[in-house]
Length: 288
Image (cartoon, rainbow, N blue to C red; front, side, top):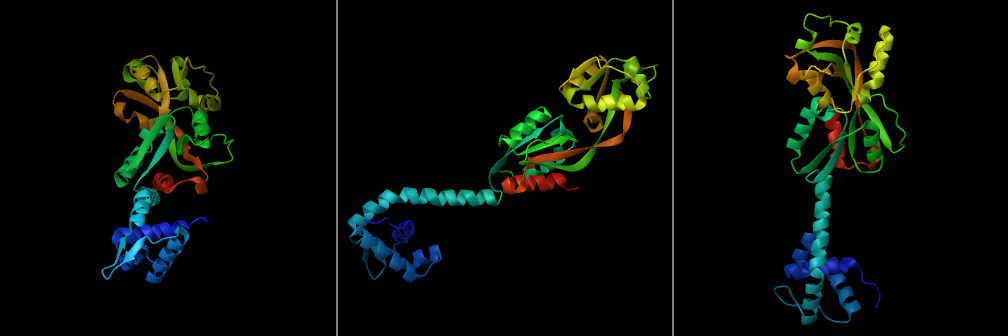
């Protein structure tokens, strides 16, 4: 017996389901003659009748019932798979894994991410913090879909695209009680305090001091902006971070703003490698 065309079985399944050639043809968006020809070809290959023709329609023969029972679950599983895939294409289902360094998901992009969740409630979202180099490695190797990051960064992955989308402002900040009655107006004043800097921003801080002709070696280098904030509130020293990340403690601190703005962006796989849910999130993150 030659290999039987799978489409014949799909036609057989629909005719058996509706017990009517016309309804089967309408459901499959093909002609009645195409349905009839497919059934004839299947019967010829199988070597026997699978339907009885009646005035009301068709009914399965005993052999036809056995075949229907055997293939029914497989056909329905494939139909469900097609439906599920269409949901992914229309963003009714899906998963996005976001990598975010230095609280960017909370400070800069929080409102847009929440808006995305509200608009597409069936998309699963996972947000992972980490070092920029580690997050880019995971993105390149398929463990993440989008990375939110401060720029500039060195991109050593040919399958990764980095897009600048906005800017952020940094500042030095201290607990008001720590700097009370002491100079805390200019970058040069920081040399009088213990300095706490984020590990990922050490290069930015060093360059700021270099531009001001000030030589300062930070006493504390910390990975987490939350830990820096906690240390500042406990009057350990002066912290450095994104001004937007300090809204919740602005009444407790004094700041020295950095007038220069620094770019932030998105890293993602090349657009032809991304699914529709990721591309839609990318569009929303870029929007004003």
